[in-house]
Amino acid sequence: MLKSPVKKPGWWDEFLAFAIKGNAMALAVGTIIGSAFSTITKSLTDDVIMPIVAIFMGGVDFSQLKLELPRLFSDPVVDEAGNVVPNTLNYGNFLSAVINFAILALVVFFLVKGLNQLSHLGKKREEQEAAKEPPKPAEPSAEEKLLAEIRDLLKEKV
Image 1: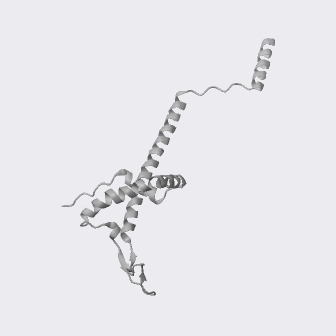
Image 2: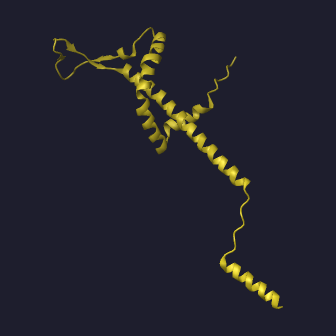
Image 3: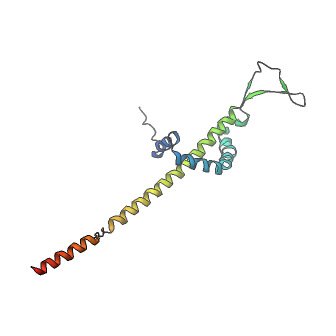
């Protein structure tokens, strides 16, 4: 029995196009929102999302996910207490940063999407108001008025 594929939300394709292509306005909004909400998204990621993800990964703390690398061309680095400082690749912090970015990108996407909808509604209302009012006939120029007077005077003489 074949399962029907999971239907993705309609906004998902729009989000992907935004995240990949973007434009100058989206970049500016992203920069502003990113700086304003970076602490909030970092806290959301570190304090809410990552503990939930850790439940499904056996209680792993993402900040502790690292890979110890060898020192090939130097002697081991020793701290003040005489302990060897390991050379580590901290990929857990990177995973947290990627999740942080995804959350922030979604927030910016929905903000820009909302602004675009408001802009579209404003343009639509302007078009509706313009359609309601019939265009006013153009007032004759001074030259046309003079020609009309001359015509009227000629009609009176005939």
